[in-house]
Length: 409
Ligand SMILES: Nc1ncnc2c1ncn2[C@@H]1O[C@H](COP(=O)(O)OP(=O)(O)O)[C@@H](O)[C@H]1O
Ligand SMILES: [Mg+2]
Image (cartoon, rainbow, N blue to C red):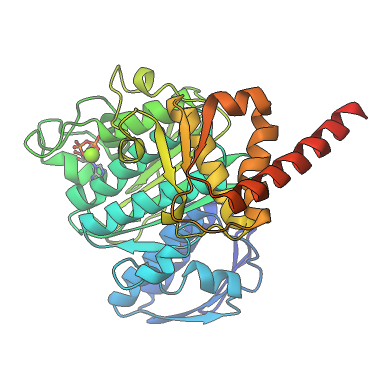
């Protein structure tokens, strides 16, 4: 058998790509065939897989791990370094991979087992996004709110206490994409025991995204999926919720659609929440969440007694020596400014020296980005020794000459 998603030869499954979500359904169909034949091993061949999107590799990794627990053995053929780094064979357990996590949370499949694991992930995802891309107002807050709710839902409602998550930045399309998967009871089963009593799995998903619908008022308020839905709609992003045999799709703010007869395994079909935000489109969080404005803890932690956002450069783990670090901090402060419209203070105390490339990437580029006047209105530099002052002076001067030269040509 050969389709545009996968090819099957006995018990060997050759994936054609890892970018189209239909691969997941096709994979499940083949697995069902193997389970029916009481086949207890399969070969997974990745020779055609060059790139992988979260909404394909997260559910597939979760399904593989789940079936391995049930005694099916999988052999992995032609796993590229890229796929190994993603953790398709063995998702990264948060508590056992703290060091890996510190080096980057995106582009890896994480398995979270506790609310603490989920908390660590939310924090690092948000930090990494802020350091890698400049987002429009509301995107970081909206993302953080949404991912937190979705991970919490796995812990609260799946009945399994663990799940899988992966995120990516797609620079060319300006998308932030995340997918969360669990092998639990699914939305329909969890709501079946509640007062809502959905008539079908697709109705269960439609109910779950409504404001105030929760399986148990003592545990939840029913705002999580509703809020995610609102945030995605406000941003004209994308949301796919797949649970059991049904799938709910919201795209570009259009009328949502539901689909039934999605292939499923005989057990543990759980829930997949796949969402995409456009990071160059602003989101009005208070509009999306009906007047509610979540507390921005990151901003609060950085606030000094004058109400300014203060960046203590000596505490930055990435240091003050490299271009990469300068760029991370520059992106982060632009995001902080977009979120808060407050003055940003760079505190250079306890630093003896910084590299010219760091100074250029951070200060030089901020001056050209905002203009001399704009920079002076937003940013303050304090506690710089004379060596650092001359390094910054030189890099700003060079940048300004360069940008002036570009403009006058
Ligand atoms: N991962 C999941 N597994 C099973 N059921 C879920 C999952 N996520 C959400 N649900 C169902 O959808 C309902 C609504 O979720 P949500 O809007 O986050 O509200 P709350 O978490 O406050 O109940 C939950 O009460 C639960 O019944
Ligand atoms: Mg919830």
